[in-house]
Amino acid sequence: MKENYTLICRLAAEFTICCFCGWLYEVALYWMMYGYYQERGVLQLPLLPIYGFGGLALLALFRKRRNWAWVFFGSVLLTTALELVCSYLLEWIFGESLWDYSHWWLDFEGRISLPSSLIFGMMSLLLIKGLDPMMQKFQEKAPSWLVQGIGTLCMLTILGDAMWTFFVK
Image 1: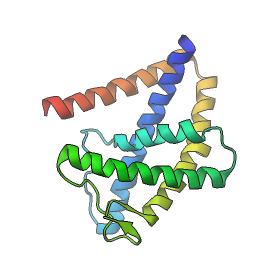
Image 2: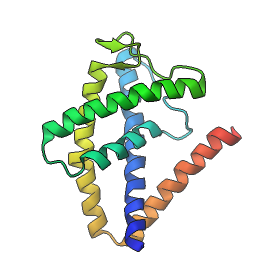
Image 3: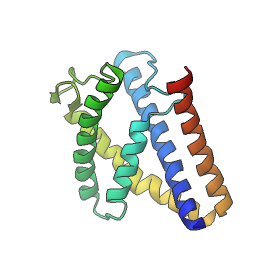
Image 4: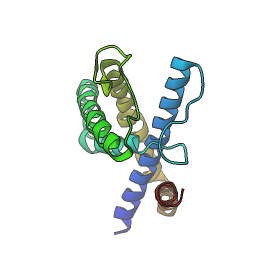
């Protein structure tokens, strides 16, 4: 039971890191393309949950894969499909399009594009071949109370931010 909770906490930490890295990526991309800071996301904290959910899906599917090409191309396909589905879902929920690739090369309805899909493939490699092994080593070496504490803090922070964003603000 304790081992399962430790694993859940590790996944919560990875989810949070993916959310934050996604936010960093989008802010940096916007800065490079347009020359100024643009707040990204719907939460109050610098976190984009779509990257967290995508990251966990990628880890579930590709964590055990050794072949980099398989991970890259599989991730390109998965993240592109996720981004397309989420674009429709989020537009339906929020009543507006949260991103627009219409000025990018090889886009589809401004919802997905080849360059963004390739970037997500590279980010997926970093997650699966870089971050996840580091997190696994941390979990193995750190005391379980520390892993559980960090994971619990991540879960409570994201849950609190979501509640604040959607129910209070």
